[in-house]
Length: 314
Image (cartoon, rainbow, N blue to C red; front, side, top):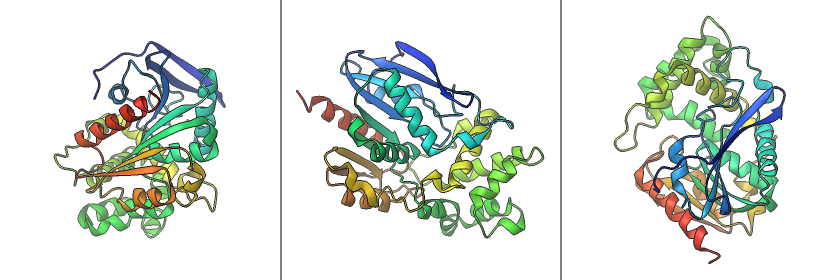
């Protein structure tokens, strides 16, 4: 990865309904525009994500999605209205940010949930996308959510039973993400629900070599914000319109080059999703690595991809 850098410009973008979205730009002000789209939902952007791109060649844009990081209001606060926090709202925020920064077209680099959001944005606005780099690829399909909240109990039966049994008995055979979202909205149960949800999150990524518990979950504010947003999105099928399938519909991306980078040992997000996406997207290239849901090799492949696109027009 490239050396750490600091942003040369930051700001808060008013996106309506009382929401302010934090954004920052680093690298070369005259460089090739690239938007880094963070995961979660709810993880927020981070300084090390600036290091995927050559700072002399790229104008690197980051933002904290609604309710995360430095954006306000904080989704972890009990009175924050999440009805105005949906995929459509996030896509509109990305467009508003692009216009605010005076960017005509940009590269999208999305990780995990950020790859789902990048796909949704690109399929809505293909004319605004120069190329895409998606890593730890997800697509927000109901089967993916069912896998991560229920089917994966076959791999971690003890931990999954603890995860399932933390919701009321009448909810255990239904939508577990929605059940947790209800617990997180109740002041009597919200703290324990956030702990239980994040404990399951830490379990299902643990097949990655060298996995260590995520220290962010020790922060009560982050834990609540993350759990509330993930369950909000997953409990509502990622707010994708009925009949939408970002994998099936990837043909609309024809002409947009893409690189899909995924770990063979990613039990949280099985390789089937990027494999099927690659088959549906004629201009994509699939890179499979021997890692889980992230790691040093994945980061190196992301840098290789950004360098390749940097040099494409030279």
